[in-house]
Length: 195
Image (cartoon, rainbow, N blue to C red; front, side):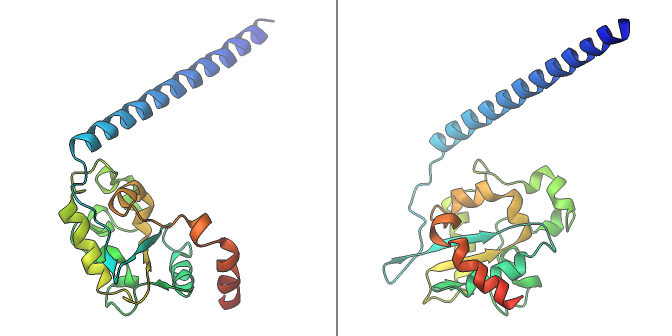
């Protein structure tokens, strides 16, 4: 009988611990949202950073995922869709955009493949000090020199984008919403046909 009572206490104790963890997580997220809003109000982007070509707005697709998870194949196949362009023959490892810009360090600076994900300095967000109009313009200029200027959907593939999506969304407000702009139905036949 006493064992049943102690099991009940353990279950209740575990539920209370879980509730406290959820409260802490919710509190931290609310705090982060508050800091983000305050930071963006203090430091708004002072100019429109959209790059234009013959009065056409560019859209951006950032492919992210762990190394060896198929990001290169996915990127190449997205780039084969109508009006899409990616990096080709850039001379850098896997034609990754992280090596074609000088605003933020590459994943190698944070431990290399896989390890960068555990380094907090590599996890860029929309409140990063690096997010200035000047710094946003630098990778755009560099990357656009490698993209086909006749196409308006620009694809960049760097596995480390996985931990900096919020930074990229803030820097490139015209990100393509994959479910609306590049429907999976259009991508799958290209991907499956070539594999």
